[in-house]
Image (cartoon, rainbow over all chains, first blue to last red; front, side, top):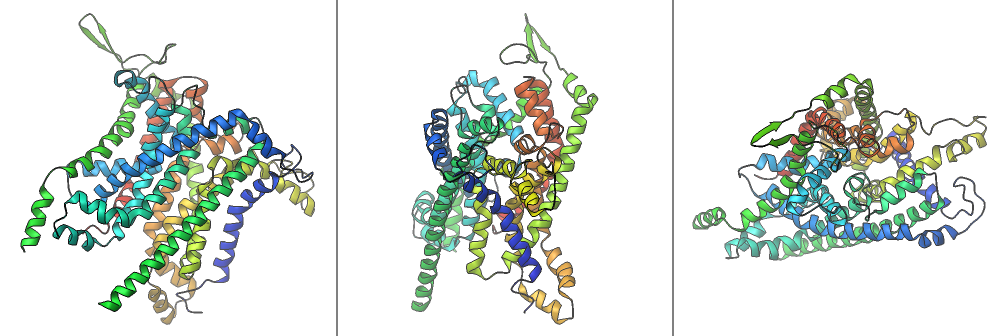
Length: 281
Length: 306
């Protein structure tokens, strides 16, 4: 075997081990969601009754609805702000305060959630009454906190796409007299559209998943789904949570497979276009 | 020439450019930077039975301004061994689990980087996919596996390897399993994106010159992947120091982690000033790793800006 390609027995074994480690817990959740018994680990027959129980749990459904709304608006705002920030990071060379800007964009990627959550709550409590936000904590404050940390992740996704983009296209358009704004909307935006979609989906899942930050900034009337799940698993394992997990995993998998299929098709199409252009030239 | 001149003139024009900078900048200043300053301020306040539950630092008595700086919260953190121990054990857990993620994640990233491009994308998607499902639910899955009458113990008893169930849940071992499980993709991704860029011919050259595969790996691949190792390690280490969900769900009552202590100070004791002091000290401890990560990340983002 050539030393540059292919894998040895050791790396193959580690790969298999890694995938078993990643997927065994998820599969066990899914299998036991169809278990008749309340005891999550004793199999007593096939049943879908926990799915019924899940949908009859009004608190759980309300929490899910809160989470979906927050995640939707978080994703939209994060993509807009993240695109701006990514343009700044990749296109603007120097401006006063660029170092600080870079720090504000990368720090949320690693900042422990308890620190972010506590700090932003303190902001809402201490200056909220003066500027009119956060006086009533709820969906608005969760949305602001989520946009703040999701935007950083979206910025990374969009930046890497912007770096790959061929600058000569933008420059050609500008030479032909288009202004910056027009170049952005006509040339840049369509090319980075796949990154906008993956950024949107990433922000949506990050927001939908967040327990810690939401716990700090939510109010009494706005319990999110992770908060509800957390309080119910604290009381012990419940097959209803397995049913919920299975549904979430199915949705994510279907979305990922569709996304992957669209991306590969786009890639193939682009490769073909480049080939055609080369042949003509 | 005139093109270039025109373009540079156009580039200097103010307008949409400043708006593009200002909107995300102001958002992050207001909702990310200023909150830390407020947390710093409140860490010098005293707890009070009021809403909000802390005293004001600045008070006006007639036309006299009174500033009260209360350092008791910090002294409390230093004197009470609970906090010192919590910081130390969080750092220890974070360092050990980062090393475990690296040991498991490196071979995975390496194997994926050496696949042919079509299978590579599928394998990469399989690594990322679990992290798109709920973090909380993936940790919850381990409760069912690790508990005394859980799947793992039943399996081992069924095989006849053990007679008594092993106590794994609510021990540090469970916390390590949970952390490595949840953070593994964060290690694999930067390692992969580094390893996939390596030039195969370097390894071929090493092998032609008589280096054994292990020697070639240690002298060629490993040093070249330093940037990926640092990025992956920081992506695991920093958030794990403040982790709350994993020690809460998988750890025992004696699993001390500072994120959990902060949570309890805030939600159970309602002592906001002490919670703020805990957060500020954690932030100070993490400044160095965050700076290392920031340097790597901004290099990544600007690498092609020439």
